[in-house]
Image (cartoon, rainbow, N blue to C red; front, top):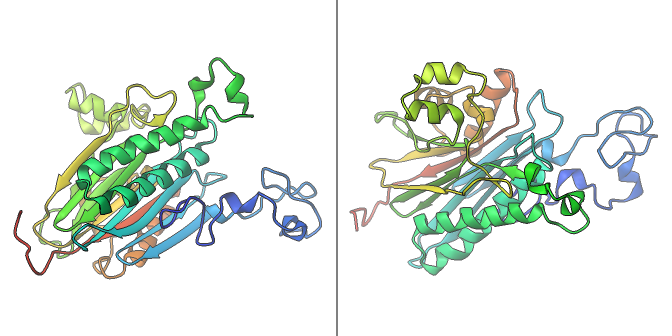
Length: 331
């Protein structure tokens, strides 16, 4: 995961459990306390899988929180997130949440999602204070994230570098991001990770703010299948857009909204929305006080997915949107 715009995993920074060069004592198996841990994170003596920092991570900043969990079926967490905040030129806050889901069938999906989340967040942290329109900044951030993921396919010393077909299975991930900036809420995405709008008072209807780049969504939009038929098909979750060197033409999607009431943006991977697909379902699971307790809200949502079976990695950011009390009129 990425936190606060800084690449790495967990509140302590770094990546997968610190497989870099920790002290030798830290490489002893947590179970048998005798065996050495191999580079894949397993004890060479008893075979026990070592806990990794990335298996469960949480981050809370002023105005945003995120939680990521490996889930109950996967051996590692291939999701990543970044939450951060900065100031617009007028001094008002801009808060950022980026969530990425590594494509499991590709190589090094955890690295892809990590690179994308960190790069997108860093780009927004640089461009928003300069006065770039948030929607344009989001578009550019997705392009920057795509370039970061593409570069993983050609890193020196990797087997992929010497493979003429290296792009066929290059590192890849989805991306969804949200930015609150003044009276504006901006979302951007590629793939099937989603953003939902949940009004605080539940008086207005909740809504999904993104449209999946997926086989099912294509079938529905083309009028070839009903939503129920499409999502019942085994091909439903095949994504048609992603970040990676083997992606077809990259089409970053962005949208800008001016909510008429306070609410919360739920930014998540399919590891969550598979268990709360409709906006009404997501609103039902999200605690009513999520705007004031975003970390608690994110924990509850992740818990809902785990209770439902936790078949995938689960990552969610909860980003409150507060109405401006003064000068709230449209520009």
